[in-house]
Length: 202
Length: 117
Image 1 (cartoon, rainbow over the protein chains, first blue to last red):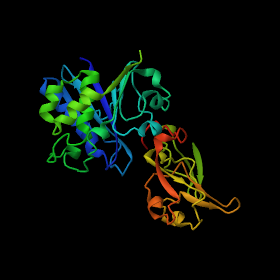
Image 2: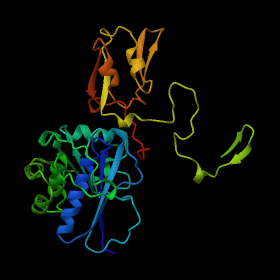
Image 3: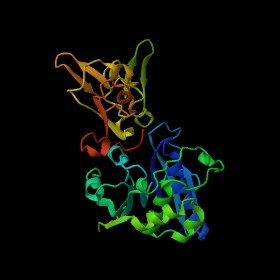
Image 4: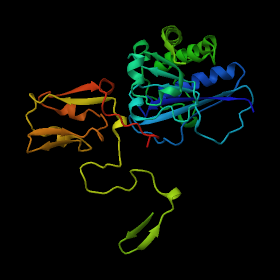
């Protein structure tokens, strides 16, 4: 079986649920468009979410068919995206990560300051920050598209577009051009791609 | 893990079937040492002791009793481990003694749970 790239997105329940889901949907759809085998879904463990509770969204990308269909958590994430930076104070977000992983945080703060809150930061190969809230400022509260429903609100209308752009720049797993076909806020996505601050730690 | 339950004799719970933290807690206590919800918080209420009149509106307004009054020291005590940052106290404070401040501005209050809950 080919390597499955596991991507976990941490977000806040209800108030930022749609944005977190949009990051997963945008990345997943873009990778699918590029001919990869893809799975992306809400977390089952953290549901039902409540306001501000930390919840996860998952994406899996592989060159071959993904065989673990009925596993609904990413136990070994390669990339972790934090949609709301305070989450790093409350949760071991790097749990299960192999050394050399990537962390992308939506924050205006300094990378060194944020790393202070991550005791197992030795695992990280790359850390990136992007002030996605400043780029978009929109946090859609909408439940369309949740739990497998049809998304009528559209994907990537808020800060999720910028975060997806940052993901494309940092990891290179999807192309910016493919993302542009999927997200609503293409300008925000381009800005996220251009403005993300990347630091290699190893 | 073996426990004596009143009227029900003794039950033995295997370790792998034991419930996660927070499911069974001693009560009533002011702070459940087994249950942390402070990682829900994005914003922290910060009290200005000069402006505070000890009217206890925050104590009444807080849905989770995170504000208490320490009579001996004459000060308001905030429960950092349980406050979810809902900001009701900030909205209700009549003298504007409470102000919201980003939780990431503070280096204390790190909970760092393995799993969300």
